[in-house]
Amino acid sequence: MLRRYIRAAIGAKLLATLSPLEIQAAYQIMIDRKLSARTVRYAHAVLRSAMRQAIRWHLLLTDPTQAVQLPCQQRREMRVLTTEQARVFLRTASESPQACLFAVALTTGMRPSEYLALCWQDIDWERGTVSVVRTLHKNEGQWTFADTKRVRTRRVVRLQMWVLRLLLKLKGKTEEAGAKSLHDSVFSNLIFTTPRGEPINEEYLVKKHFKPILREAGVPDIRLYDLRHTSATLALAVGVPPKVVSEQLGHASAAFTLDTY
Image (cartoon, one colour):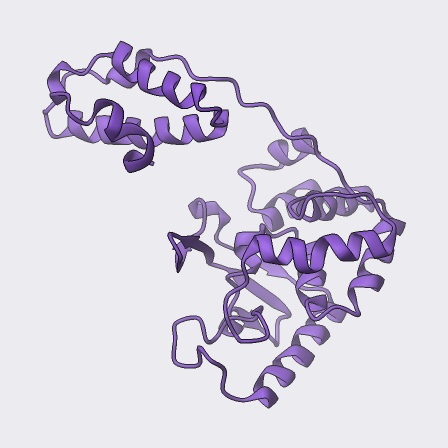
């Protein structure tokens, strides 16, 4: 974020002379380039963190990022499947090579970056749970694991029995397939991979599998992330306590969950 958007605009300035107006101008350049409000806010968060560290090291007396104005971030429209549409989606997805992935996504409410990072050691087969402890990202062509978004998003999620059976079946197929191209890599223990055993790119997943399944099933054209929203909405609709749903999603509180859904 700094390399792409900040250093080019203010990188040559002396730290002690950096003014809110100059930072505002840097953000305005991003806005003029048609970058999203989310990207501007993310760059601001990184820069603000750096300024706070500078204050702790007594390199600055005040934080120049405090006085800038940020663009409003519009919330994306949330679209969810009904109970019947979710059943049709899962039934159609059962014929897909990524059937198990979509079953996990829809029944647990995990974020894509979370379930794409799941490894076999994360599953407790006896308790029927899976631990969400990391995320998977691709930066500049390189796959990397990262910690979950926040400490509270590290959580243990209960799996439905039929999903657990799908995972067990997938594990058997994976072991039967033998060595993969990435067998000796840090990603060799991933649950969900491409046919070559590589990590799954979210864009590839959407284009190759998710969108075709939606079309074949005849259900609304939702985003991949909307499977998370669908999971939460359906759970609340059948009477699962908001606190339980909140913990499963890794939300800060049940109040946030209810406000969202």
